[in-house]
Image (cartoon, rainbow, N blue to C red; front, top):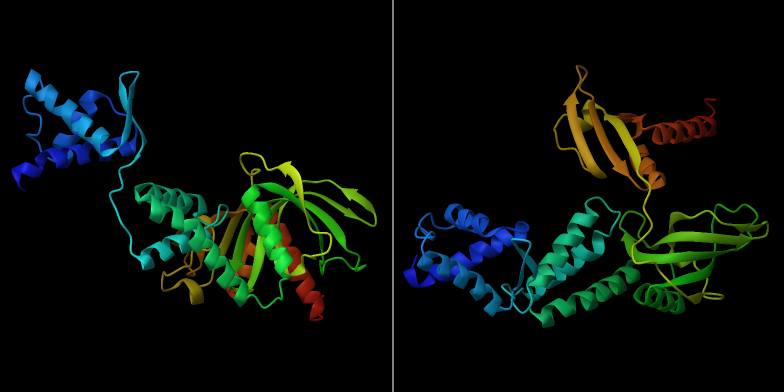
Length: 335
């Protein structure tokens, strides 16, 4: 390591420490001694040594990094004009894909979004600003893969409502309505995502109310709307703004057991958030625990394992799976 580069390496080491959280002056010194060079501030008790630490922090500020000193600690506010990385076109597209695929509420979605935001902070402004446009192109490409014919007005209005953070009202064709009557839904539109299994584009929204032939039903809950079933007629962006943060999503506990036919290789797919794979029992069945905010989709995914998966908990998941199995048994004449 060239001695001329040592000051730069010390400053970068300090930046790595501040990235972890606020740090007092002595904490920074101790960190650099372990992380970079045990002799970096060997004369720290003397004026020259203290000046070296101050210069290393000043160097970061000169690079554009915003650092604030308060209550006896240094705080990293932002990377400011400091852009230490530059991505290729393929890497930028991959970053946009991660941001689009791992929406909040998806397994590890919040962690991936935080990572994407952090990498964006390190990028030059032009590259950082290109991420939303790349995500938009990705959504357009996914729409072309949707087997539904989505009216252009539906695409445009849903996009605009999400971008402007405004409430959305529309009529929705739901196969769950036996009377065939349309219901008007008023929702907070938060995200669009493409379901690679069903091959449809969905609006992830918080439903505020439903108006139908039997009156108004006001029970807020998260719901996924298939864009191909939203009618262009009557679609309206309302003046009301979305709240600063999305409503809290439900958390359903999942516990299920996978048969040896599935689990014996040890390669168990982690479909859900907070998935934990436990030791196999004497018969080779493996217990898996997790959480989900979408019980409907989660149970139908597990149902796809057939007789090689048994849902044992939590209470909502077990109760709903028992209902599904009873109805299937009745369908085939076993009940």
